[in-house]
Image (cartoon, rainbow, N blue to C red):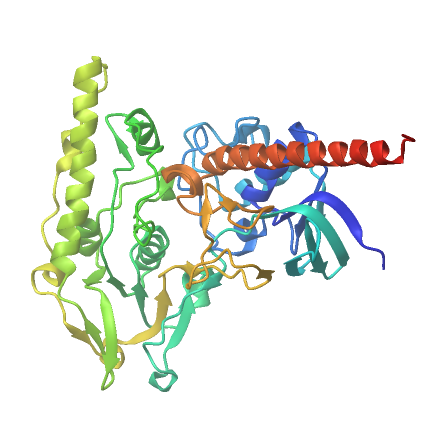
Length: 433
């Protein structure tokens, strides 16, 4: 089978790959997008059934299309369901005729020997490309810690494997991890009548809305979306935010009043019992402080700019502490508590083992500057905090893609200059003296 040659190859047709394709198309850069599944497959089948976007439709979208162009029922302040988000991304790709090939698995990427570019082996044949954009994101391999042994007889799944309450065996459920996924799943199970235990670590919990404006708006006017990435190792701050039921502020103290038993961090397992840290109160207090600090900044912004936004004293109301907070458990016997399922909502690890390059740190994470790796021609897109706080959002990855496309364009100009110069030099050598 002949090798297909192309200037740029994009791996992945999720929001990152589509954004990358749009910018390269606008710059007339020949490229192909390879996707092993369907367009935006992670949105369709990689999360629970009731998932909605964490940002409102007016904010978390590409600049060139609104959500109501895909589904007229989605207003600007709505939180689109995951299927609508997937349909939106597929429609956006059709809008500019993105050159996407689905059902193609990339098996390996390695640099060509003695010349520029990369060799890419796939399930549909081989490619050669001057530039590679790995747009698969950082959420690739679900993390299920080796804490609870199989002998405990407990069903253990990752949050990415959860679909709905009916999927789980009867009994109580322990959810480890209190970011957006963990807290939304815990709330759904509690509302379905399950007994729920939720292990809560350090976290931020912004208000869903304040003084009539969504927190996405507040982060924008306060300049927080453009915050540069923190120091290495501190990028992944757990954030508890939800768009469920038209958006609501996550308040762990309220969830405890509604029947969820809050726990500190899950530290280990011994003698048939889970060992829990004594940090629940500290974690909740720190989350409250984060919440109230944003309210303070918002109030100061309103006063400074003379905005006519209604006061919202209820946003600062504090629910009374339930017994699980005043007297936190330090150990938990799953059998005694009737726990049949543990859902690990503790994140993912990146898997770039298919790329042969020294552009990764010891943990396998890309070494890059705003998506530009130290391997010439290799780029990354869709990483948390790739350039700013908003990089994980649809609108944020669009701006990151624009920068990467510009860098690809710059390198194309350098290559074109060199090719032209060498052609002139060879022609000069052939001319008679």
